[in-house]
Length: 145
Ligand SMILES: [Zn+2]
Image 1 (cartoon, rainbow, N blue to C red):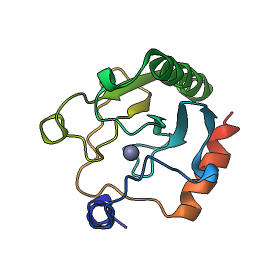
Image 2 (image 1 turned 60 degrees about the horizontal axis):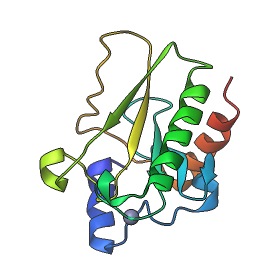
Image 3 (image 1 turned 90 degrees about the horizontal axis):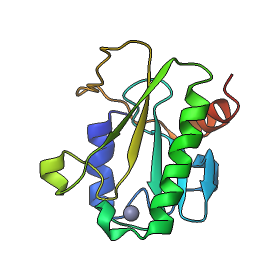
Image 4 (image 1 turned 60 degrees about the vertical axis):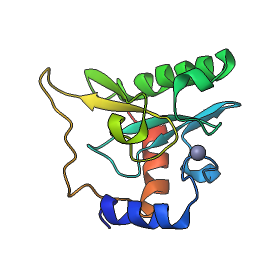
């Protein structure tokens, strides 16, 4: 399925897909945040770090929540650096539409990079993984080497 179609379904359902993820979608977690493969990846091994509290912007988080996010960003970078020479972190802050976020729950993208000038434009053909595909990605990425 394409992400744009999945997004339409998600919006129609009216539930935040980042608030309560199934445990088998999670690579690592701590009490305040979790690390998961992107379900609509820009590139292979695209990860997301997501706080468990539903918030749109960083200043709604307390210091423990921010620290938990940072810890998982470091963990995600450690995983990706087993296979890639570099990692880019993308975060969109602010107003939902103006920032270009598609889910109203803040999240950090961890994007593996092979080259300096790599760009991450997912385009309109961005796929949305099935639950089965996502669970397979969790297992593969958790033990990436
Ligand atoms: Zn949420």
